[in-house]
Length: 437
Image (cartoon, rainbow, N blue to C red; front, side):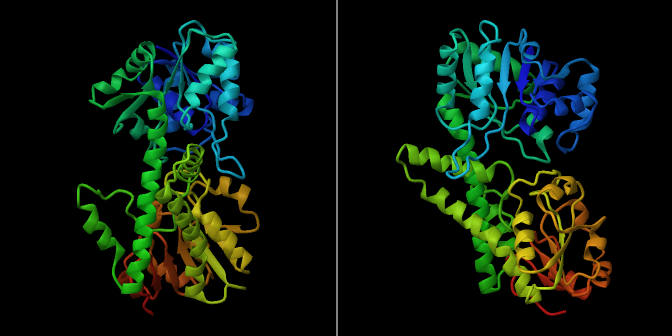
């Protein structure tokens, strides 16, 4: 089947490459000529494990192509996926659909009869209805519109795409259902469940899923605060409740709060939708506030460990919002570093892959070549993102490099006794009160 993918950002590029790997003929279209030139030369605009090899293999086989020319890109396509950005609008947090609607108006001029237009971008309830209206306004009356939200985790996107928990398709017409069923047919061999719903239901499902996970993260972070007050261990609490199959163990890891490209903007967009329809979402609203407060409070954890931050040197390990990505959007490290600098601290930082992105938004800090170089002569070492290479640091070497002997472990990577044996004063999250070395 011939597929066009509009947008070569995170969702569009991963989805396009995976569809091509299924054997479909996929053309990815983007207005950014530099990005398309890079992709045609094997240069990835994002860092995602396995993506470069997947793109290269399918490009060499002729199944995956890239262009800035929309008419060429969508020619003979039976399905056109819209995977452009829907960032939170400044001021009110509503999803900005400018790029989506621009893409639809341009598509209306070039798509063939019977084309299925599919929103892959995360869009508010009713967006599919508006897309249909725009197509009619532009004279297109025989296209079908569907919603097919993505549920990809950055750092594990390819595995998530090929082995999904579920595929959600919102389509009100039989043709759209049949086309999407054929596109995803390779996954039926793995018995991946496909849920056909109305379009509005599919649009809301994506927001509801992300909001629920955000609630789960904020819940365990508040329990972590209570653990510190009563001298309990949040990791054991998380295991104790996570073994209940009604709850499950995922997203029960206490830390500095959620970030990234999805949870922050999607919770805000859900609230905007709820406000529009006059339905209060108190749990989600509180979750957003709890998370904002969480990220802002992380600097207090460092200050409580080292005292007055003015003139102190703080080493930060991990800048991306999570491991296995270079995505800096809403990363907890950004809020922490900005607060440290505002209080007069010097910051040295290291991230295995996010340095290039971090340099764009964190001017005035020092970027180290590795974890130990970051720790050199620092008064405290703060672990913000739990990259695998930070899980097995030589703590004796860390202690020797540090001027102060403070380890602030915001991801609970290390055991307090292990850190103490190395001569470090350990501050975890929800792990009880710190003990002097």
